[in-house]
Image 1 (cartoon, rainbow, N blue to C red):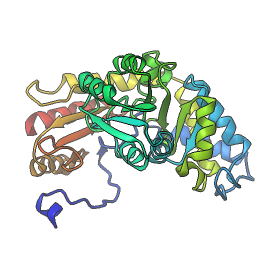
Image 2 (image 1 turned 30 degrees about the vertical axis):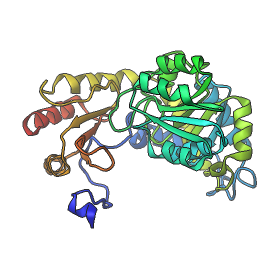
Image 3 (image 1 turned 180 degrees about the vertical axis):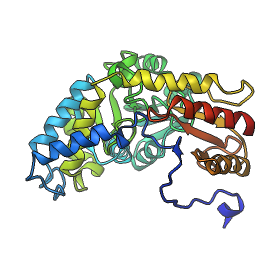
Length: 361
C-alpha cells in the first residue's frame, strides 16, 4: 500500500501505562478520582436511570434533565441557547451541512478540523478556503462571496495549538455582513473566565453567530453542543440531520457533563494548566522548531514521517507517551510531535520531557 511505503499507515493501539503527553484530557477530569467519586455518589441517588436513551431526541430520547443541562451550558458560556450533539464531529457536520443553502457561501480556514470540512462539503453552498489565519486572503474570498456568508474557524487549532485572529475576523464579518462560526473544542476549559473559551475571553459572544464546544477534551467526558440564538436552535432541531437521525446520548453521559461543569467552577484549573505550558516552553532549547502557542497543544515541527515517528518511539521507550502526527494528516514537510500538556502532569515530568526533547530534536 502507498501509505505503508510513505510510513503513514495508521493502526489501532491499546492503552498503555506511559506518562500521558498525548491525550486531550487537559485538566485531568477524565481520570480525576474526585470527579469520579462525585459521579458515582450522585448516580446512587438516582436508582431509576436508564442505561440508554432509547431513541432520538425527537422521539423517546429527550427529558427535562437534558434540557436543563442545555440551559446551564448556555448560561455558563453566556449564550442564548445550547443544543447537545453526540460528538463534536456530529455538531460541526449537522450545523454546516444544514445551515448554508444553495447560493450561499462558506469560507473556511485551510487548517480546519475534518468535521468542519466534511460539514461544508455536505452543504449545497459555494465553498472557499483561505490560507491559515491570513486575513488578506480571507477578505479576497469575502469580496466574491454570494448569498448568506459564513466564516468557519477554530479558536484554537488542533494540530498547531495556535489561535485564530478572532477580533479581526469578526471585524471583517461586519464589513461583509458575514456570520462567524467558531469551533471552541480546544479552547473550552483552557481560556476565558473559568474556562468559558477564547470567544468569551475576547468578549466576542455577541459578534459570533455560533460556537461549537466539546465535552470530550478539557471537560473529560463526551459529547458537544452548539451555542447560538433561539432561532438557530429551533432550526437545527428541524433540519440538522446528525441531530435528528441518531439515538441521543444516555443519561449517564449527560450527568457526567453536568458534574464536570460544576467541578470546573470549583477552583482555578486554568492557572494550573498555564503554569505547565509556561514551564514547558521556557525549558526547550530556542533552536527547536516550536510552533507559537499559548494553548495546551504544543507542536514541534520535525519534517518527515520517518524522523517524527522515530523520535516518538524513542520517547515512548523511555516511558513518555508523545505521538507523531504524520502526513497526510498534516501537510508534507510539517510532520511534527504533538505534545499535549495536562494538569495531571507534574512539573518534574514536564521538565524531564523537555530534557529528553532537547537531546533528541
